[in-house]
Length: 300
Image 1 (cartoon, rainbow, N blue to C red):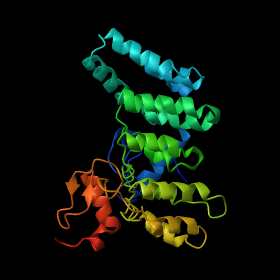
Image 2: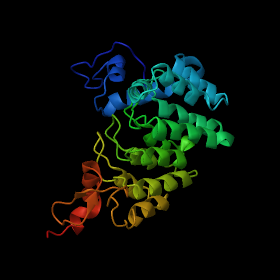
Image 3: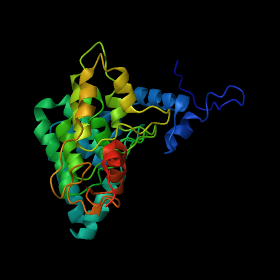
Image 4: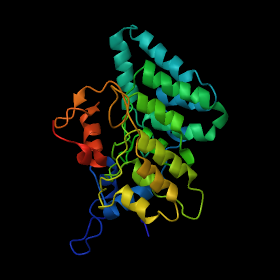
């Protein structure tokens, strides 16, 4: 049974607990085993609650948006920029402040606030996605902000079954978010996606595994406990064949100039061995090597 505690330390003899809960929350170190279970359990019992935790001006503007005043975040931010002189330096100052914000016990970044709102207000998806586009494309708030579990909004958008939001995920991806960003448990979103309910509806798991793979997802790197998503999928192949089929289908062909892994442009880095495959980043090159390029790559 999971237990929430405040000051227990691991006993030299029991080998079970390695840190206090406060240490786990305040750290950004990768963890596994019982520490990972403890942090997961704590986060599920202590979610960020907008009405309780969005008390600062930016948070209040976001809360207004969730109460259907959808222009509130943009209006507040643009007013702040104007008040600081309206210059690019003023815009950068406000952008950095918005990016640095974290709300609630789980230290939720601004994009993470939008995800449950998209789930709770399905009839206002367009307005909420417009807020995401404003933040990502106009204000250019970085999209890789992480919460206390080390997860980005994109991570949750394609892995948390009630909140699966591919359109939101695509906005974040187009703004530079990586599908292969790892949590503090050293796993990618695929580890969460692969945890399908074999007795229930697994259609969202299959849908997002396809999305993940098509956008350059890595399913072979092991997490902190030595397990990878591909192994989990293989174990459930009979019960959830769609996940296995998605991995087998792969990401599909890439067009000229696209990253061989994720499909982004521009892809300016060539594989040093075959001189053919192009990549947008070293992260994508590493992921593609593990996912199959290692076998196909032939030296010039």
